[in-house]
Image (cartoon, rainbow, N blue to C red):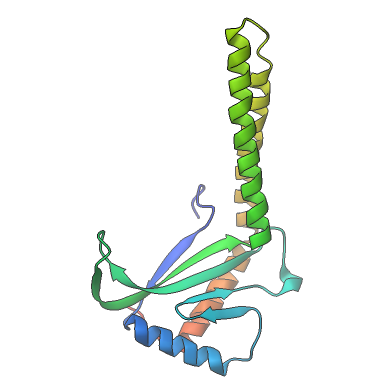
Amino acid sequence: MQWFRLRPTFEIPLNETKQDAVQKIAETYQQLPKEKLLQIFGDYGELHLPTDEHRIWSPHLSFSIDNRSDEHGHQVGEHAYIHGRFAPRFEVWTFVWICYMAFGFSAFFGFILGFSQFMIGASSWGNAIGMVALLLWGALIVIAHVGQQLSSDQMHALRDRLNELLNRAELHRLN
């Protein structure tokens, strides 16, 4: 896992068209017992962990089925692919982004204050606010990465559940 990938992604190329893949997954989803751990909405789905397995950095897996397209957005070939992304639960992800914005806001205005103080010949204590905010921002990045590493077993479990769903749906993958 790479250091700066806060939301790891992957792609699974399929030997199916998008329409066939969506139909097969929908049919398989209808046969499964209804639970809140798997949700399918057309060509988009989410896999969640049971509540009793949640940790602070527990992920969820969102995936979508799409066609290959070139840089201009034109469809390339008939084969679809599944694009998956791991992310923290929504409440954790929201909190993290609020902290990023607060630290960025504090750093920006702390440095502006420090520069203004410097320009009028006063003590530039505003720079200390900016530095503390930047240190907190960096600490949050490190904490997020450590949390992601501690939850890698849950990411593997979610990926295994997605593979099981694809196998049940009898989706053929390209090698």
